[in-house]
Length: 288
Ligand code: AMP
View 1 (spheres, rainbow, N blue to C red):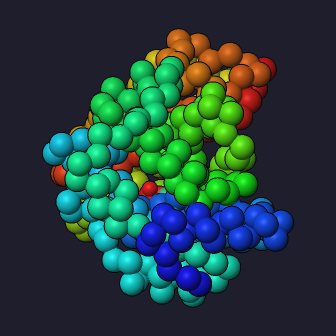
View 2: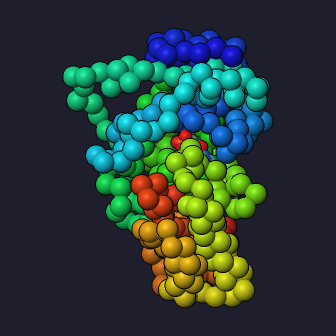
């Protein structure tokens, strides 16, 4: 497993692989790796001959006041975890100044239409930061496949739309949410939770599971589903609810009634103190 920090070296490595007709899969991460990231790595390995894991805490996807400075960074531990997992050929870990030279006034990628709901209104500029860094990582790593977790389902939808709208020659692969035994979706931010908050944080997965159960049992009213999700989250005294929303699975638009045959997402974001957690359930096809 080679660790590269330079854009030129990464591009040269990918060019060399492509000349040999090796297919390449990229797993973009911000590090602080956990079993959710490892599921993406295994998916990448299944898809392609060569696997790149990028590790970069991207400043432009954090709003002022968010946790950019505090975000956990430990490249050595991340590399150890990846070596133990196996199957990773290159870790691309550029320095901040490499990606964002101090004087840069760089081009941004703005994906229209999927940011009016869910995390969009609560994190202004976040998805432009995400789309821009992902576009750049795709140009640097030149993969045939890039793997994204459905835990960040809005990010996944936005990256897919960017690739389609900009005719980028890469397949975006979604990977299901990896959870702790008690249901909490794995996240690099879970380590911030105190013992009591960690215990109560299961309300997110309970809420999205209830949404999935309600949909399976025939409930079609978004407000009925949202009310029940809210009720579950409010059983936690430490939870500070940001949103619960039921949206169309493609357009991410709010719906009043779910339409049989279409996909749907029920999602939530909740603060525990300073720590913001998200979770969702994706229903591929609302039953008749
Ligand atoms: P991050 O390092 O948090 O930016 O995440 C990097 C990638 O891992 C993103 O595509 C995430 O959606 C994905 N990911 C993070 N947590 C999970 C999880 N619990 N299950 C599946 N994928 C995840």
